[in-house]
Image (cartoon, rainbow, N blue to C red; front, side):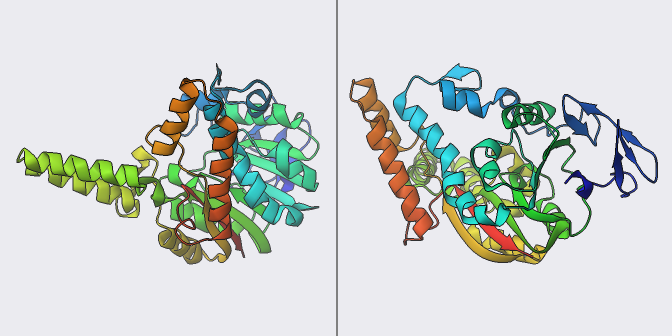
Length: 344
């Protein structure tokens, strides 16, 4: 339902014929490769890594290739696949039935990785992707089967007020976007504005647990201890202050944008309620499987010594995520991504 979109200049309706033009100010917006430009062609998020320009979901699923590189490790593929599927398997399944016949807006959509694999099967009335990166929108359009019809792809600078009419969106997705914008609370207020009364929003942001895993905490403690042994108290103090900033990024948000900030769950809930949302469900997902994790390192060591542990490792991380989703103590807030299903 591209009629939900409004002119970014004067907030009037857009007419779609051979071109897209504002009914009031007569501003013309061009379409290139199936993507509607409601912003300057050069505008993009400066914090978006350039390698994401080549990300292609279908290429990953069919050829085990991501960012132009083929994944040869079974353990590494299990990690990538698990992080890819955990969102649609858990969170989209929770709101999937609500998407049928509804108009969906995906703010900060990237390459729309879940459109063809999860969203489309619920038969929404329309899906509109909004993102600052043209190449990602182009890949999303290609993987969706092309533009036109009920899928729309729109390039827009998310730092500006969203070009969407008030109370016009049935289902809103905003996944892993807030940690990339200068004013996340302002964006949340704008998301609340465009959602219909009774509409559903699925919003995510990294969780501070990413900096509280035992191996990361131990690394910080050892670094401080080493500095103190060598009487370098200034460095010890700086290490401690840096760690405090990582677990409380809301106190230094502009600086925190440089390291992909994760919020404490209670701060995320406060941001959502301050924007006006009613939180229906809030939990974390995604086990922190990276180089520094000792279990990941063990799995990689075994694989390098000819043990086929990929399927066993996949079962392990899936079990941990099931515990997170079920809300078991200790596991409940241990995921590195937190998700909130909200209503207006």
